[in-house]
Image (cartoon, rainbow, N blue to C red; front, side, top):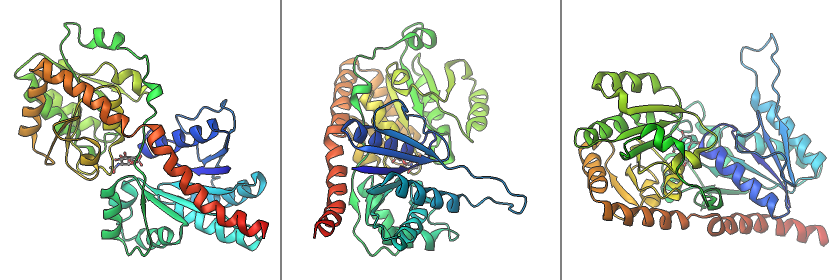
Length: 381
Ligand code: GMT
């Protein structure tokens, strides 16, 4: 197959999933073309069968806002034609699905039939998509894609509840490449930030409001009042300043460390004991899955798709959004009982295995084949 993948190149989970999926398809011998405005963080350009096409938006004095979607559409048309792509898989509805639809229509004029797969990731539906300024376009683009997948049952339901969707949506959960974790051991991060061997609590996110990083700090403050521990905050974003302020107010700055963004999240996670993800909305929670792959139990909220990923009482514990008291209680329950912690560590990894690449990848391949088969049949007839 010759597949085009459109994604956001940044640290968000949708970009990570799109990149890992493309790299895996390339490893299986398919030709994969990534199309984005900057090189996706996880993209290995030296891997066989992998190509990258940058969408370059020029500034014209005429425009206050450069029309990225139009430039992307033209790029899609050009890459599909020049590279003979068989299908396009767009990740994140806005604006990728609508740009892909327009590209499809343009290509049709030249007799090219291009199937479009659209994967919904979360904020494109739960946040942006509901905005009246996007809603009609998103509804249309979802209804007109040839296949649509959502990363959790919860996201699928949200999509049906908030949009006038007249088509089938497949659920293909996010996945984890466990080989990235094989052989990794805790490294100097542990001795540097927890020199007395105290437990390390961790949180990884883009520090947006929806992540409720302040709740992470509150849970940590509760834990810290009962035992020696440190909190490592990984990532960066708009809420960081407020969170730093809060640490100062609580007088626990010395035990909270901001590590910033990292490309090496797997290695950092290997040093943690307990992961905290108290999000307000989370269609899946890839960060929780990554933590579990590193053998870390997860204390999370029950929002969106999190209960599908973090099994309560097995890979960790879930609580209502904002229930700091219960999250703190569950965190202490694990941290104070080493036998229980050990079982949960093992169970967290077993839970991650349910979402491992070999479990999930065949669903995408099956979907691609289903879309391509009718085209092959009509070409041979
Ligand atoms: O969480 C974000 O703000 C980023 C966003 C993205 O597009 O990467 O994450 C969404 O997609 C991830 C990958 O499918 C999911 O694991 C996240 O749960 C989802 N975020 C939200 O729903 C808030």
